[in-house]
Image (cartoon, rainbow, N blue to C red; front, side, top):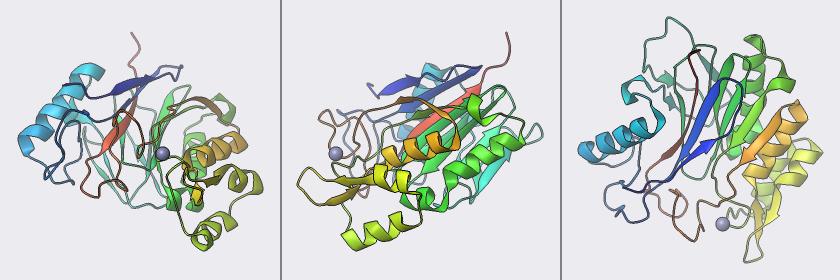
Length: 255
Ligand SMILES: [Zn+2]
């Protein structure tokens, strides 16, 4: 299997990764070749083996992964010491924790996966168009602050998402989405597709929001999930039956 997996440099005591898809794997009618979501059409054996593969590469146990049931909203969930290992949180689009060895996962296929790390805390964020507009990134940063983190110590890693090159939207719909955002975020998000129509650059919007909040963007996967020439990523817009890749972050237990 040659599923993409990239380590995201986060510093502090955190480790993070972004996964992708195996370009050689057939995707229809079942999502395979790196799909990690049981909400997509899949064969259980494929899902188990893809999860085990990522578990081996990351040194994590898939049964302990904390997924979210994402709803494109502004709510943040917190994993506490008493939260059962592997618990899935409903109706949230970001997770934060100060606990060590608690892998936090965000599932995506075009939306922006963001991993956050600071002294003694980590977070994972699902930032699609609605999430960016509703302020999920600011909400995740505020949740980390409540855990005792100083915002200027937060390092963010931004994973693969659909680019401004391909995320076409009718101009009135795009401008409605941008209307509530600060000027610098709206300007960053305003883009044009490769074929000359209005589009959104969600990754650039995320960079602008993180920077405006006072966090440091340490890295960004420069790829478009739709038009990547090597077909390394799942893209919901390119294929509504597509699987889901993940961003994963955890605090390492101190050695
Ligand atoms: Zn593109």
